[in-house]
Image 1 (cartoon, helix red, strand yellow):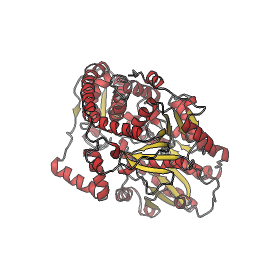
Image 2: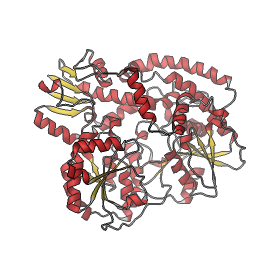
Image 3: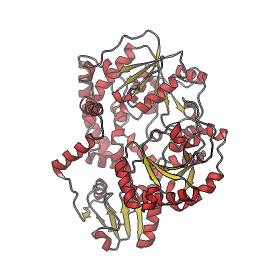
Length: 594
């Protein structure tokens, strides 16, 4: 049996390997199930992607098991588990290893395995097979000159202030410099709800909840400038975490770093080596950054301790537990008996599926999110309260000719090795034909990570001159004005499907291009936020589906329901709600209480 492993930068049918016969062709990129089905039929062999080879339930279970292996072994004096804080940084490598591991189990003994060129997955598979894998070509690095050109091109896309922020995030992670730039303001005696944030979208969500309770005081503490909003309501104060960093650094923290470093060596030698996938992750340097992360993180921990000691914090409302530096204050507060609540800053939250929830309570934006948390992620229903911060969007829509756009809400598919050009080739011509049929225009709405110039060049390669005239590439924000022109929207699994549903705009999921294990698309479809398209050919059904589209107020409320002020107050104060003590937290996570 002969198996070809195709690098994401290579093509299945273009290269010296295309002249050979293969029994399996495994794509390390992602072209979508429709493409692979066609390639399998025309090529006379099985063609599939590594991403499409895993069982989602088994993969999720494997992630949970791997990412919990070191819990309870690296606990500091404040009760923070440094394994728990670090594992998101190792997630992508472990995710990759588990996918390769799944493939390895199905490769027959004695099979000949060849790759188009080196790749981390090829090296992992070689280690799992216990033998080398021949590659048609070596990976080209490009050298220093190439790297300089790449950095030069990257800097053109950002403002000087953004570049400074990136530099400080990279080289001043523990606030050695920034703590001198931020003078701490005088603390108020009035109790406050702490809002820890590292990103602006998280801050917006927290402040939206704060606006529901204007009589309460909220304190937003940001770990980096990107967490700041342009303006704040009167009941929300802003602080930088750097202002609470102790000067000089605590000697006890240095002693603790030495102790935890020794314990980390034991984890490396025992826990990692005893688990096959973690041993591989160690060999491929998934944990190499832990020592530096620990040293930096302990100093940030001291800053959060300073917040809790110097400010009258009554409760914590977090919106991102997957970020280590905004997960810290949740654990620190909870161990002090302070009420902790986590809220949605997106439609769904897959991170809870593989990492334990730390907060006492979770505010889910609607029944759709609650069902996902309980059914898919395994969170206890007692810990979930339904209630979004903001009012639902427009519940009526004027379906007249002013809605003249068929919008493809694009994403940076390359971030997960998606072959964007293949997807565009499948979708855009069908949308152009649809636009001519219904007298509308095709708009490709780009994700902030996408380049408009690059996408226009791609469309120029793919489309006829007639189709090219019918397509417009835009990078607008999702304003009411923009959404007011959308006749229907298409996406793969983006939460923009919910934005469309709440405005009563028909949304369609290009499900054949969905590659993730976390099942956002099926959940959107389950609650009527979007309709599923199984193949590009079903795009021609859109006019009929739009004509039959009905989105009732009851359906909208299941997607998003605004929280009552009384319910929000109860959630933040802990009245008549689940409250976990430090001992409970330790029992849940397997962490000894010191």
